[in-house]
Every structure is written in structure tokens, then in C-alpha cells.
Image (tube, rainbow, N blue to C red; front, side, top):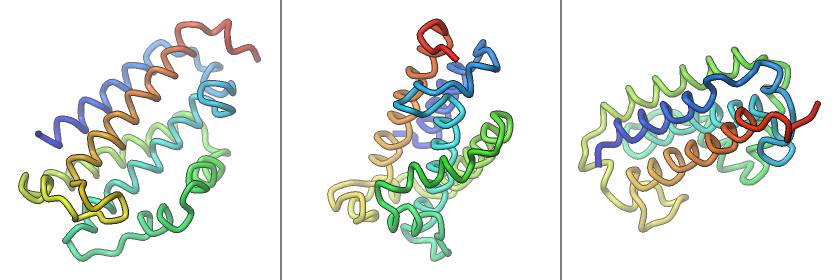
Length: 162
């Protein structure tokens, strides 16, 4: 697997889902439960920030405050992070996501393919999993899932009234 490409293509899919989305549609709830498209982008941005910490935490010996928060809050992490970005506009949450994505690409590029394949480096995710697995399931798949939800809002605005 080529982790850099998997991350990049997942992100490009997400960005394509936003193309043609009318600006007012970004704030309407219902894209994913009560979340709007902007909330989805805020959620994905917070996850991308965690990914940088994850990629560094496996063996690079750096502080990982975002991963620590993610693990401490558990299921409450999603709503807490979306709520923390509630006052931000769509351009701001998208910029944060894009900046975090660039950092994750740079960080994954510094890791060897062998270290990305090594199981047991992220025990909080599961002893049988590697960073490659996490990237595919929690990042590539996650963005693809949310991209489909965004496309639904974009392509069927009548289903998401004000």
C-alpha cells in the first residue's frame, strides 16, 4: 500500500464532493444526523489533526495532545470538536482540514513503508492493526463515507429544507 496516495485520493474525493455545493447548503442540518456539511468538514478536520499525532506517536517521540484528547473523550470527541468549531465559517473549517491534511501527508512521507505496515504500533486501535490499516479504514473510508453524504446534500437540496 502507498499510504501517501491513499490519504491524498481520499481527500481529493472529499473535495470533489464539495464542488458545486451552494453556499447556503453548507449550514443546513441533516447531512449526517443533525450535522450540516460544515459540521462534517469540522469533524473531518479534527480527525485529520489527530492523524498527525497518531503518525508521530507510534515511534517518533513527540507530544500528542490531540491524540490524547481523542482517546480521553472517546465517543464524546466528535461532538466536542464540532461544537468547538461552531462559530467558524465553512471557509475556515475547510482551511483547517486542508492544512491538517498537508501536515498528515508530510508526516506520513517521513515514515518508512515497513513502519506503516507493522502491526501493534497503535494498541488503542487494536493489536492486530497497523498504521496502514488505520489510514485505510478510519481516514480513506471515513472521508469516502462523508463525501457520499455531502454529495446527497449537493445533488438533492430539496431534501434539506431550511
